[in-house]
Every structure is written in structure tokens, then in C-alpha cells.
Amino acid sequence: MTGPDAPASAKQPPVLRLRNIVKEYAGSPPLRILHGIDLTVEQGELVAVVGPSGSGKSSLLALLGTLDRPSSGRIALEGHDLGALSDRKIAALRAHRIGFVFQQFFLLPGLTSTENVATGLLYSGESARRRRNRAVRALRSVGLEHRMDHHPDQLSGGEKQRVAIARALVGSPGLLLADEPTGSLDSASGDDVIELLRRLNADGTTVLVITHDRERAASFPRCVGIQDGRIAFDENRPHAGQPGRRP
Image 1 (cartoon, one colour):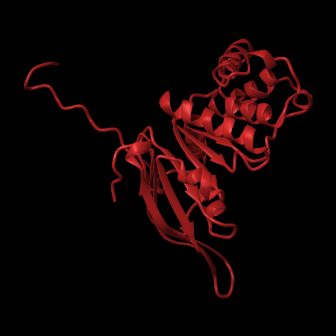
Image 2 (tube, rainbow, N blue to C red; image 1 turned 90 degrees about the vertical axis):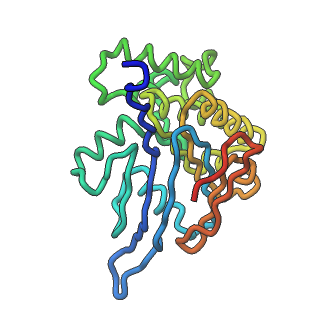
Image 3 (tube, rainbow, N blue to C red; image 1 turned 90 degrees about the horizontal axis):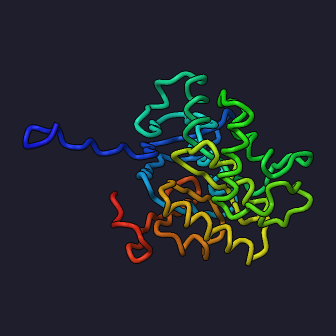
């Protein structure tokens, strides 16, 4: 339908919306790790979450990635209220909409780069041939077309992380979560990985990086600080390519 009676285009829901999130673990008294976290990540953002060891970053990452449930509060992933979904439905949503990159690469030593990336599609129901073709495209997207048949022990640290990123992207997730993706790399390789994440974001992937590196975090268009389980600051830098920050 066109013309004045056509419905307005619906605004896409945020990729993530956390409201008053509390996470605590059983004990006497209970150990509270996160204290009333409010956080929204919009479609297409590039966000760094920075904080020291023990600040609550790992607990927050587990909640952002739907690997854990909060003790209280609400989390929505692309408009889906996770509190209303079963564990099975959350797992299916995670498998299709979230890609993970970790400090440790978790590549299988007996598999080539292509085969490692294709493992990201094992539960997709696609044929082996189609999984391989998609893995090849993912490796090309991270600049590793010349390392497709190499095994992990034939790759540099930076190349291993690129394989891990390709594996996270092969299922075309809406959100890429990277946990200390440069932590095991030298500074030059780390810079290359951050530049790759920037390029993937420019191509449309929403990227959130968890890091303790304040210098790297400060270079992101949006930087969220976490301290003692609370949001300490949430800063946008429009000159870095993102619009002004909402509350």
C-alpha cells in the first residue's frame, strides 16, 4: 500500500533491552553481582563494555548472550521477552541470533579453518555442502581466503581469532558478542581484530565487545563502563560514527 493511508514503517526493536537487572548467587547472605542494570543496545550499534576484573562483566555477558537468567528484572532480545520463553526456545533464539567470540579461540585442532567455521552450522539442518559454502564465504569476509585449508597450529593468533569470528558470523546473527577478543593477541594483531569488528559493524552487524582495556574501549562509538556490578557511565561519541545516546 502506498499513499497517505499506508502504514508507517515499524521501528525495529532494540537488539537488547535490559531493565533493572539483578543477578545474585545463593548464599547466606546471597552474593549480589549485578545491581539494577539498565542497558539498551540498538540495531547497528558498536559498543564496548569496559570494567576491571570482578566488576561484573562476565555475569553481564552471560545475561546478554542468554547463557544465564537474571535473578530479577527483564531482558528482551530483538523484542522477545526472555522471561516468557522456555529454555528450549531461548536456546533456539541464541543459536540463530547471537554469535560469540571469546578470548580463547576454541578451534578444533584436527579441523581446517573451513571445517571449524562450518561447525557453527552443525545444528542448522543444512547439508554439508551448503555448510561448507557458507563457511568459505564467512572466511572470505574476514580476509582468510588464503588460510581456508590450514589447521589451527598453522595459523597466527590473529588468524585464529579471525577464524573464530568467521565461525560466529557464519549463521548471520543479528548480534555479535566478543569477550576480550584481543586478550590473547599482541597489540598489532589486536588492532587488526578491532578493525575487523568495525568493518563488520559498518556492514550491518550489531557488535558488543566486553573488555578491560580502557584505551581500546575509549575508541568505540559508544563506551559503557561497569564497576561493582553497576553502570558507572554510558558515553556516546557522535564523531566516531554513532548518533547521540538515548537514556
